Length: 532
Image (cartoon, rainbow, N blue to C red; front, side, top):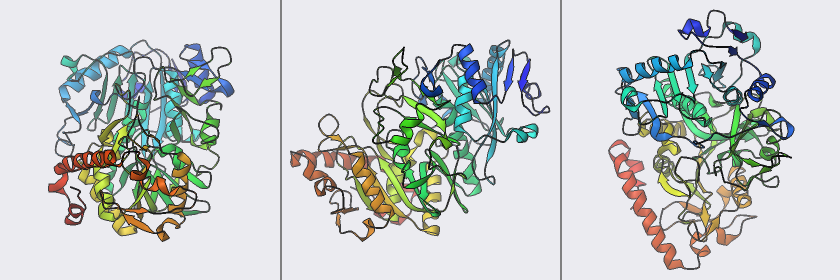
């Protein structure tokens, strides 16, 4: 039996999906929570938040993600970074998943991705769990009720956590599977309850589609000055680098916290919500995000809480350090009503340096910006992926390699052209360690990072005195109001400067080795910025 509002010419039966139990189309937040509670998928928390755990999988499963190798994408996918699945394997997977779905209840959400209607796509999400429907309703953009009457999806995502894939039969890596078929416009997810797979599948999809339209897809957060969307800043960075935290600046308007496009018209958010890490979240440092954890419908994922009072424990990482909350963008008081901004005036590349070598901020030339964009140096933070228990230094090109279906140079060239055409000040910001490497030093103070970013975006930093970093060649400010001078020179924060020098040499060698694979594909000015 079907319930809810749906285009009568675009039901699941019209897509060849038949034999299901009850189908709930486009339920809104209160009803989704009612259903999730009836099904014992989670518990009601303070303020009407919804508390869930995701079992075995508390982070993404990048080794289980596949792209179907069809003729239309065989020459354009970056296969060194994306595991191939045969069309035959996908067909078997799809057939078996549809059989698995028979007789079970499902929740359907018809949503859009992309705030700029010129580049948005329609998506249908079919989920086994009511709370997954709530999650994707938060994270994507919600059409008005009247628009659902004639809604048709460009792509469909089916998520069945209870389904188990067969690697030999389905040409995949394990029982867990994320398979994207661009030709059939289908994404299949099975064997994991972790909700982040839903949104990252959409991001991967847009990362492939948008470059053909001259749009630069970016794994970044974005904000703009009050009353001035032209003064837009974007923050590149992987999970755990501070994208969400630093873009939620009360002095600026939040465009979005994770995924954006840069077109010839400006910047636009892909999403309609936020998916913020909550480990060590505090009302003092991040009051707006903290407040969402007690708002109606916010999903609290994999957090320890008091069984009686439902009080959340923001320090206990027993389940995972990747504990999160998911909420609609309008829960942030200074969020943009349009999710649109101008061409970026400031581009910030966030890195979490577990070596303790990089300064808290550095000014980059356009060539240096391209170098660091393609390098994508950071540290995978504990819990973000399966098996990561402490910071792990890594290079994730474009600050989002797991979500890049095309070769990195495609995105690098797009970014280079955008900077050249529109101009932007570029900054490298380290939110990782200072005073020593991980285990010895301490995390960069968030107040110092905020002060440096404010100085960069209001023009104070550009007028400051800079020194040339002897290791990386970029410019580092000597003094910034509100920030201790010693913090700006990482070598001075170490007790043993010889140990710093040895660690810096080690890091430089890692940069050089990593970048060798890009040398045949880059321009001469970027080659001139190559280190080592």
